[in-house]
Structure formats: structure tokens, C-alpha cells
Image 1 (tube, rainbow, N blue to C red):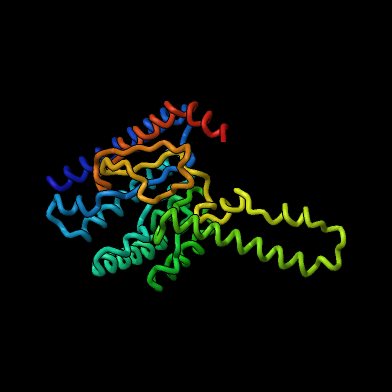
Image 2 (tube, rainbow, N blue to C red):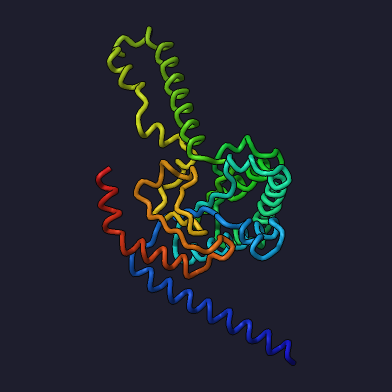
Length: 287
């Protein structure tokens, strides 16, 4: 009898929370909704240490927080979510911790591809962003499989930054832009003898590397710049994350550790974005 009552109580609380969430999002939808929200997942290890649990349990709690944020953003109408899952600098950590993170990443990526997963429920397209060749082969293969399997999903985009730093991204973008221009020059030189109308001045203008070339070759070139960047634990550093893309981005640093992030933090971030929206739009127009 008591189990039945407990079950009914849980369902009632769950349905009440869902109703409240939808009501909040309905109110928020009156104002501008951010198109892209990025997260720095800070505090998983401290969360574990404070609760005297293993670091692995802390990282798993962080994964569930990511899934909650994905669900809330989907319901709110956010089209792009980016998470800073693993920095290139994280490869300096203890080998056993790195291996655990790689194993956990492999487990969760494979889990996301199951038929009953949130990816299929919400129509999520997954992008892995970063220097993927630095990943263990099983993780890299699983990441490529996930991107291919979700390529036709269109409702929301989840960008997972792994083996990523902004400095590496910019080096990659510059190198790719230079290689592209070099290939173009070689093609023109091969055809120049057949086309006398190609002038040296035109060649010089065509082969100057422009801002759009760099932006097109960034890892994050497949998404618009974020409107909000949320870093938990109260830290206000970007930690080499999206340095190119956050010129006019609202930064929000709640003091909670990432596994503790909840609906109220997302709502507060969106409310601040809506309050500052006219100023943010004015700043964008100046660029």
C-alpha cells in the first residue's frame, strides 16, 4: 500500500514539475530565446571530493546534468548546445583518470545511439568538435559513427568539444586556410597559360586570406556564435574555450558545481540574456 502511495506521489511531483517548467518556458518565449548556449562543465571532481565519492561517480553525475540541460534547452527552443567535455590540456592529468574519461565517453556515446535514447526522442544531431585524431581509436570511431547516425536529425544540435582548445582551433584554421589558398594558386598557375585575362592584381586579391576563410575553417564553423556561455563553480575564466566565438556572448558563472546545475540556473541565464539583448545586438552590429 505504502509503495503505491509513494509511486503516486512521485508521479504527481514529476507531473507538477513538468507543468511548472512548461509554464516558465511559455513566459520566457515572450522574449528573445538564445539560439546557442555553451557550457563549461566545471566542478565534477570537486563534487565527488565534497561527497566522498569516486571521481568516476562525479563525472557520471555530470553526464546526467548534461542530459537535463539538453532536455530543458530542447523544450525552450534553443537550437545549438555546446559542451566543453575534454580539453587538450586534460591529457596532462593522471593516466588512469584520462583512461576512465575515455571509457566513460565511449560508453555514453554508444548509449546515445540506442533507439530509446534522448537523441532519437528529441531529434538531436551530434557533432564532435576538436582535434579528434588525439582521441583513442575506439572513441574516435564511436564519435564518427554518432555523427553519421544523427546527420539527418534537425531539431537540436549538440556540439561536444573533445580534444579541443581555442588555440589549437585557430592554428588549425590558419593552416587549413593557407593550404586552401596554396591549392588555388597551384590550380591557377596550371591554367594561366590558357587564360591570358587573369592578371597579377586579380591573382593577388583572390589569394589573400580573409576573415571569412579563417572562420570557415574553425572547428566551430558549423554553428553560430553562442549567445550565452555558462561556466559552473563560480569561475570566470574561459580556459581556452571558444575565444574566437565569444566576443559578444553573455557570460554567466553560477557558483554551483556542474552536477548541481538545474533549471533555475538556466532560467536565470536566459532572463539575463533577454534583459541585455538590445545591448548585445547593438554590439554585434558594430562588428
